[in-house]
Length: 523
View (cartoon, rainbow, N blue to C red):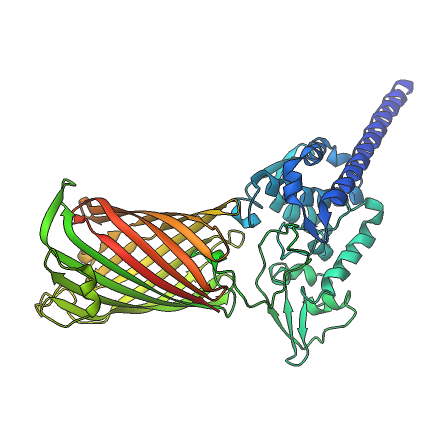
């Protein structure tokens, strides 16, 4: 019995020692985290630039997070530790990739990049959705976990502490839910505009059997009537970075002026926001590439004009719909003629102009946390008859075919001044009788590098590879390079664009050049 008693005593002593040691580890962590947030967080925003310049404290916190004996911590300490850890690792991820414009610029920011927490490798998404939400079932977590974006409730300039956590969470919930920028109430129209947090995590706010409005009213000074219509403003994924021009804790969801530079093809419009764009392309050629890729002279000039008119409207943050109308013109002329003679739009045996195609389009963001990845599909229906000129003897205008164009868009910021944009756009076409044997496929791939010298000017270079296929493989291809310029005539509303490209390589394709002009309006 004495031997057994000694073993039990030893086990209890070792366990007590490890528990006390773990508690000391946690106390040191909370103290370090508190100093860190005091130094680098101001007015709900983070001074990422300062941390990036001197990251000793951040790296020290990361080591503490990795080495802590998490399983030995008391439950309330675990919860507090995980909240602080989430916020610190968000900051670390931003600083590791700094400078950026948004956490969405980083692939796998929430669900791909793993961190070592208490000896276990885990993502931010797993901290939130496996270690916190299902374990503690506390909707107030959504007001203390800060995702690195301005759409989140503001981060505080202190660490959360175990003995103060309940009060701190209540304070943050009240601050967010009484902030008119976070929750906008329109009594005249009996409407309330909420953050999308309340839509994404609706079940968390209904856990006690109340409605979302009921949960909100528990913390609001001015209660919202339950019969008010609920709608959601688009989440602001811009970085919650402190700088001299940005001192607001939350962005204004009712702001109407758009940053047109931010609306690349990869980014969807906000709800009820619309975009109209017409892009005019003039392609002209006197030479081409033969089957061996050698240049040949046609001893004549062929010029083709396309005016692509596009309209899109945002239905939700992840869905836009719209329509296209393509107007085309062609002119066959002498080799020495001007390509711009086509712009006379004459009706002669060697010229032709018509509405070529119209059709609907849809654009989606398939992944909620990848705001800079989108997919757009357009179905073009041929309008004018005999566009190929097979029966009427007129010049070839366009293919007499139905087209399904699916465009995969992705962009990635390189600091604050540069951006890479990628587009893969399979073109699938079929003749008017929908014969299977008539199906054609092309898979153009575009890469753009953009430079933003100012908020109104964008300069970019383009490289495109366009292969077409038949049953034997690639039947033709070409490569074109170009340089373009965009300028906002009316900031946030009206943008113009010019682009010049040249076809430099190819097979069974033209060796021409293009002159382009476009206008875009976003409201």
